[in-house]
Every structure is written in C-alpha cells, then in structure tokens.
Length: 221
Image 1: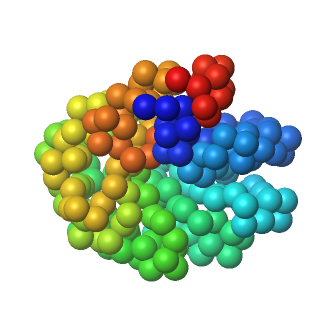
Image 2: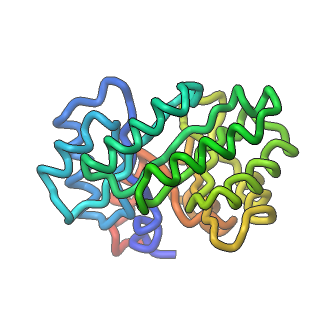
Image 3: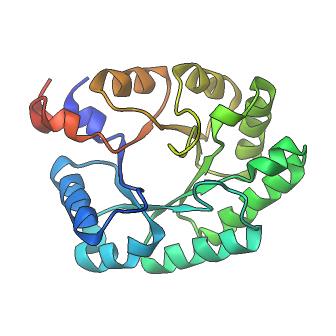
C-alpha cells in the first residue's frame, strides 16, 4: 500500500483544546499538500478554515465531543451551525450514558435527528468502543445502520483506549452494506494505519499523518 493510498484514507486531525489558529493553518496546509481525505478540526475553527481555503479543503468537525452526553437539542444546533459554517463531514459522539442505561431507542432517535440536521453531509457516529461490551457494540452497529449514518467510528481519542483491529472486524460483521468504518484513537504508525485499513476501515482519524511524510511523502513506500 503506497503512502498516497493511506493518506487518501486519513482525516488529518487536530482536536487538542490548546490548538491555536496557526496550528490549524498548518494542519490544513498539510492536508492540501498530502491530499488527505479531510481535516478534522474543532467547531470554532470551521468557518475560518472555510473562509481561508474555500472548496479546496474537505472540512470535518465534531459534535457532542468528546463525552457525548450533551442534550440532543444542543447537538442538533452544533450540527446545523457546522454545516452553515462550511463543514462537509460531521463526527458526532453518541450519548454513552443512554447506552449504559439501556435506552438504545433514544440513541437511535438522536442519530436520526443529527442525520437530518447534517443536511446531506457525511455523518460519522462515534461509539467510543473502550466503554462498550461486545453486545453493546453489535447493538450499535444495527442502530447506526438503521439510522442512515454514513460511518461508524471507534473512538474520540479522549477515552481510556482508542481503536482496536478486533473492533473493526466486529463492525465489519454487523454493519449494513452502506455503512463504512472509521478507526480513530491511538493510531500513530504507518503499520497501524495499514492494519486498520486491511481490517476494513476506510477512514483513519489520526494526528500522525506526518509519519508518512517522514517515509518519503505521498509517493514513498
């Protein structure tokens, strides 16, 4: 697998709370140079990035991030504002407290509401696998499929653990044919990126795309 093929799967990510505008500008410039799938940036920077780079850059942002337990109305407003500001992709965090309370119907309804609020943009659903049982993961695969979301995503990167290849394989076995998989959290090496793609992920959320530049850039091995 070439570096260019890997980079085309990467959401080049910077979600640290101390990220400044110069950091975001650098991230966006790298994404354009390396032809990554998108940049994933905090909601407060979406409009500025859209104004700076226009349609040349695919902007992804997060909603209900990183804990997921804000009320649905707040997540809907976040999503609507992100779309108006220029976001092409939305990564939402489910309400994990609802999962743990057994309110799977509430989780599904929230995803459906955000699917509508996203107004045709790509919607990725972060389920935070580190907090879930195998049965909960399978149930959420079914919910994400029924809700019409585009992706199921493993992790925020802010939980107790990140992506694991076995979760990608579990997702692959239980999602519908129209749903794709995004692996995120703790993915730092080229070898890990390849392993997750080979396991079935079509997107990788990472802040470590620069490791590919160190290996010869997009055209390198």
